[in-house]
Length: 229
Image (cartoon, rainbow, N blue to C red; front, side):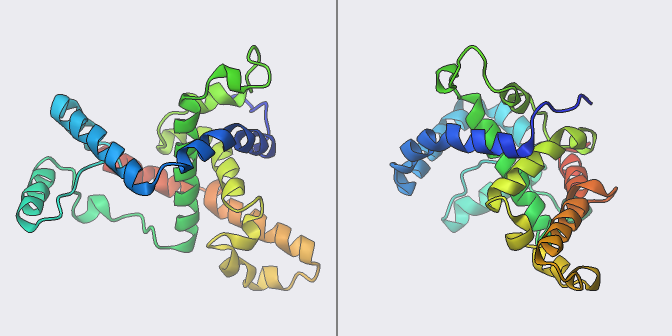
C-alpha cells in the first residue's frame, strides 16, 4: 500500500470547507421533500431495472427499499425479500453486535466515509481553489473500494478522518467507547489531563483499527458475510 501524501487533519479541514455550500443547499429542502424524491427515484429504479436492483440488494447493507405500511402488502414484501436472500437469518446475519460502544463508533465512522465518498462523486473541479490541481485525496476517496477484510488497510486513514469529523476532532471526549476506556485503571490513574486524553485516544484508535480483531476488521468481515464472500 502506498503511503498517503496527506494527513487526516488536513483532509478534514478541506472536506468540511468544500462541502459546506452543498450542505446548505440540501438543508433548504424539507425532510418530506427529500423522502418523496427518494421514494420516486427508487420506485422508478425497481420498475425499470428489477434484475439489477435485486442483484445489488443481495450484496448491500443496508439496502434502499420501499417498505409498505399496510399489513398485507408488508407480508408480501417480507416474503419476497426472504425468498431472494435479502433478509438474513441466523448465523450469517448476527456476528457483529452494532450495540457495543466501540462498534457504534466504527459504524458511525464507516457510514460517514460512505457519505463523504458519495458527496465527492459530484464534486465539480470549479469548487477547488485551483481547478487544475484538485486536492490529492479526492480521487483516492472516489476510488475507495467497498469495505471488506482485504480492503481494511485502504479504509484506515478514512476512518480516522471520519472519527475526527464525527467528534469535533476530540473522540477521546465524546466517542461512545471513550468513557469505558477512560475508567480503566491504566488510564484513570494518569494524573496529567492532556496525557490522559491522549492515552484515551490512542487506546480508542488501537481497539478500533490497529489490533488484529479491532472493530474495523470485524465490521469488514461481517460485511463480507453479508455479501456472501
